Image 1 (cartoon, rainbow, N blue to C red):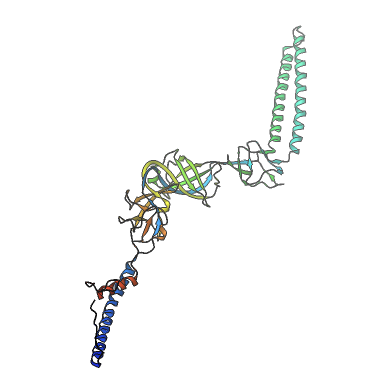
Image 2: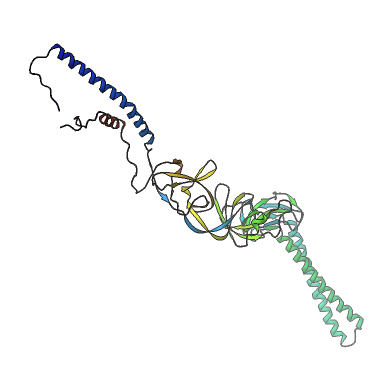
Length: 413
């Protein structure tokens, strides 16, 4: 560095020259500072724009191929497998007791109601007396016939009289059989005053009213046989051709309850009015299904390969299904719209829109958008923090002044 030394005192001219030189230096420095500040501000603005946003830490998933059954989507009502009607077999009797109501579970032969049986009991007593009389008449006729045969051997009795005793004994025998039949009929009527269940099941309807006099053939109760409910899925002709008896079915009941079943019967014809056919699916016991419900579900067909992802990787947004694929730079993601298909457990099939080798965000995609930066869990961040505005501005100024950080001019000691 050059040092000026003066041996004598300063003159007015020397002072003026020094002041002028200092003013010129200050003006040059001010000009340099003003010229450097816009460039520094522009670079700082560019750095602010280019500065990456905070990265979301994510886990990645790769599609896997699994053998899943093909499915047919369907919907339809739930109805009883079969219904049974419980009614009266004898008429003009009054209902005296009701033992079950709608929703009751009954067993075959269980007593459900009683009818008044006083008149039937009286008829039975009358028939018992008539039967006793018929037995006595037959015994008398048989005794007469036996004595007549003993006399006929001696020739004291004509053949005509002998025939009369034989015929009388036969008539008494027929009369006894008739009385026995009448007694049996009355006993049956008496048993019919007890209304019993014709099969195991659940009472789905009751029309019986206590005290009502009902004629023969009146319906009193209706049963869902064995408590079995089935799903009557409606399919079109193309779907129907792929369904077979014994295939598994899964459906969702109202309230989100899942149920399973097996195809019991495929209708042989289609409706001429709707062009659809009914597939009868027997549901597993205890499924919670009730007759009258409407459900939608699937029928499982043959196995077929499926490219699957975790359901958490698929984001439903604006009516489309999106996944976020990690780009080759390992830092940003790209949104991919995919078409989904079958679902099983916590995985979903990707029909199109994604390669088998793609790496996608396994969860948290709802917080991402096109080009978002991510930090892969367990990996290193590839981006460095941006240089601050103040440090970059200072560096540019020093470069413009050609000074090193220590404040000394470059190239001089």
